[in-house]
Length: 85
Image (cartoon, rainbow, N blue to C red; front, side, top):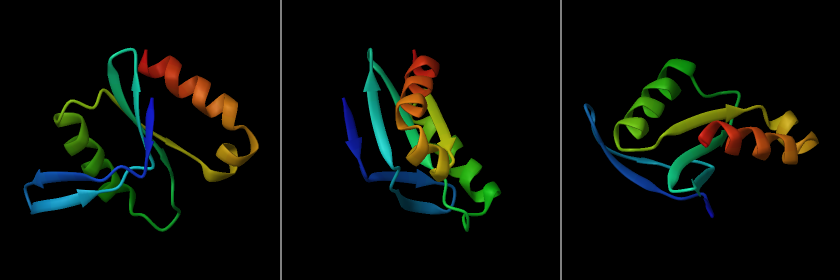
């Protein structure tokens, strides 16, 4: 089961923030977030957001290149589910 563009409301050290992961995935009772990277996002900020999500019970946050997602969507999903397992 997956939710595209699910909005999460998080309490962070900087206050409340919304996070809009690309896909929230529930697989075999585990939660993971599959993100398609956007080139202009600063990596340090992104890793901080990932840590906040993981502190709330998300087992896996994985980033993928948009070119790979378009060219090999089945491979991306298969790899993600294998890592989440």
